[in-house]
Structure formats: C-alpha cells, structure tokens
Length: 93
Image 1 (cartoon, rainbow, N blue to C red):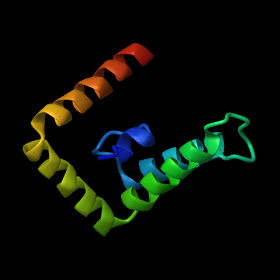
Image 2: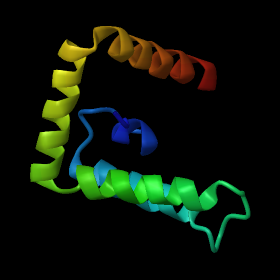
Image 3: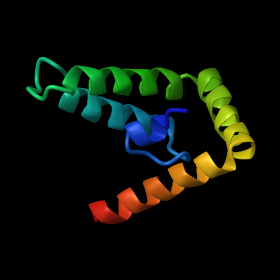
C-alpha cells in the first residue's frame, strides 16, 4: 500500500491546509516542465495521486481505514514500513 502521507512529506494528522501547501510545493518541484530529473514525471504523478486521495474527505477516510486494516492484516510489512519511515526521517536531519 502506498503511503500518500510520505509522498507529500506529511504526518497522518496533517490538516487540509498542510496537505495543500505540501502538494503545491511538491508538484512544483517535480513538474516535468520544471524538473529535468528523469523520474520527475513519475514523482509528479505520485504527488497528484496522493493529493487526490488526501484532499477529499471521503477518500482520505477510506484510505486511513485501509491503512489501519493493513496494520492488522500484515503486521510485519507494516512494521517494516514504519521503521523505514522513522529511519529515513532520522537520516534526513
């Protein structure tokens, strides 16, 4: 399962305003017309997809419920993802 919060560099408790600000920043950074990186189009699509889900109240609620369910159904994968996110956050500091 994709972590849309991670794609936008946010925590799961982010407000709609924080989601919009992060989306604009990330979309501008990865827009294919502005970035010459070879993976810019793919990252831009990921950012758009994350924003589409997290900015819509109903879609976000469903996404969050699926994330919680995933924690219960595959705890090893979920734990690995949590630790990876945690380690990445420490290394970026």
